[in-house]
Image 1 (cartoon, rainbow, N blue to C red):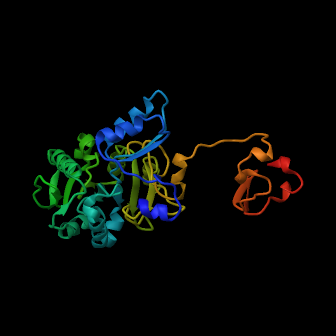
Image 2 (image 1 turned 90 degrees about the vertical axis):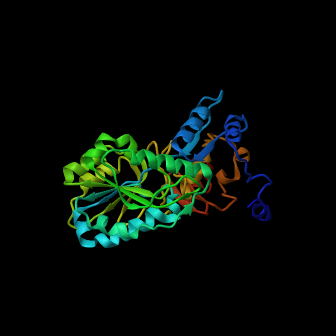
Image 3 (image 1 turned 180 degrees about the vertical axis):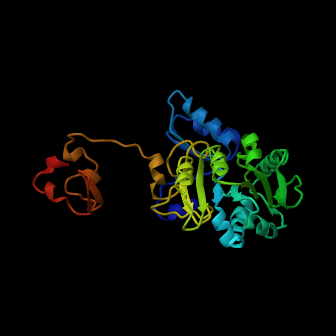
Length: 331
């Protein structure tokens, strides 16, 4: 990566890599660092977030941490295409051994769900190596916590052993169990596991949705005649990206992408993927009544760089704004 950047004219050192817990702390503490971002566990992100805020000169810190990425499957959608939804869910939560920050970790399905019945036969038995030993240990620890919840059953998947590999597993429970053990069931377990929560009616579903904390995504699978306004109103309060009919593990680097959400999914509302992600590391500066010769070239009246600019709210695509020709004081 460093060689590729140098070959394209980037300054030396624009990309580098350090490893280790203490190295991360040292970077956050160093006075030359003026902003930082993080992707990882909630505990790790919170520790670094507090450290960044506790510096003599605090710095912005953008953490992406825990996210269960809830999915709601309506009864009509389950009846119409349960097998199709099961295939989509199986592919999504097992993708990359479940090591996606957008993995669907909690899925609300109607009781006697066709999706649930079909899903059991789509769960693989092959074990996959996790990215790091600590991630593997975290998966096993989180899974043990889930399996210790009374009333939470194994729907599909094999026995888990300690070690660097993991096997996919599906768990199932009820809304009542979720209400009693929300802290455990709604904590992200990074790896190939998902929890089905069976609901009876909309009232029970909404009671479960009220327990959700912030997530990067929330997904709804429905049919055209479903009344969804209340469900959408609940989910848009806890997620940065709402999907209708898709699966959240597809993340495009695009202008419309938003990859962020309320705590604990991220520590800010900024996106960490997509065209606006760079805003995390930009510091706005306004130049008021500055002489033309002291302005950055991007702000000068003649637009010497020929770039798109917005002037008084109007976007000009590379040309000089008409009202500036002969009247430069209007910038």
